Length: 404
Image 1: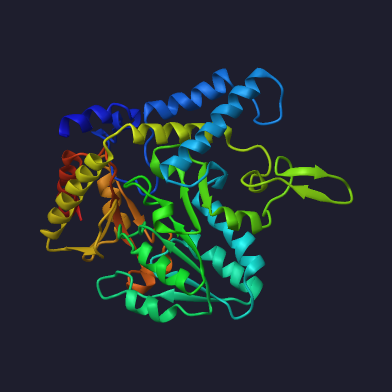
Image 2 (image 1 turned 90 degrees about the vertical axis):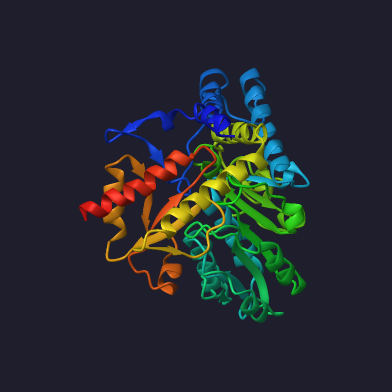
């Protein structure tokens, strides 16, 4: 497998860079992943050879762009095992996808006293839209607390879910702690109470296969740039029954059937939710990223990532002044060094060409719950990382310690 990873790394030009006089060790994948050459080629091909707007035009370039654009939608549907490509809505990313549901479902179907269930582990993008929906409708936010090991308390979740629970919005994998949440069980409990369910899958789709039918969620949101595709493109999967009921959240061109000064009739899903000219190149390149991932042995890549994760956890655990936060199982590891500000440690690592992230990781309520006001250092993995990357990080921490 090591030889295969070295070969795959050559597909990612950025990984060959020298940063601050050192070979780049890129461990900030939870923020954004690097892009393989086929994705870069797909972007270049669209803008160089088929640049045209999609749908309705009668000329050849538009036809080519439209076919590639809609083929990407079909690829994404297969990628997450959605029943139909018509249940795939293009968005700018996970944040916009969640805002769409918070507006079109939250603000139009919630009533005063209804309850929205979140968790302490959520990214701000899966908190703030629901706060706004609650403020607009009189609904109430409820929050699943953590256990002593910083995992979701399932017993508490079961006690919180009732006939008043109308919507569950839950992250599949914590971006801050790398913990995989029991989303299938939470969805089962919420649906038994009659609640709508949304999963924030931003940190999941790049690490392991996702099957929205097996999860039985109503909505699933993710971003292209977390799974080796460009920024500015994302996906909302929505169950067809809900998409048919929901009003559009943005209006204008493309999402209409007819317009007069007296009235407007809206298009069918998914186009009803895609106002204006979309990110055509981004969608096509996301399709290329799906092709790239599907061409790999994903089970082997998952085993490789797990090996790296265990190497990192073992190495950090051996350092007396390092405390690992939570129980990471996918992608990200958060830690703190006693008496050292996370930003100071990250700066010293950056001087050695090692890219990590610090702060609250857009999870301020989580950091408050963990009594970590300065946040953490987060090292996050992708399949193109190697054992040498982990060794470099551990050695870099040792060297930073000498300078502090």
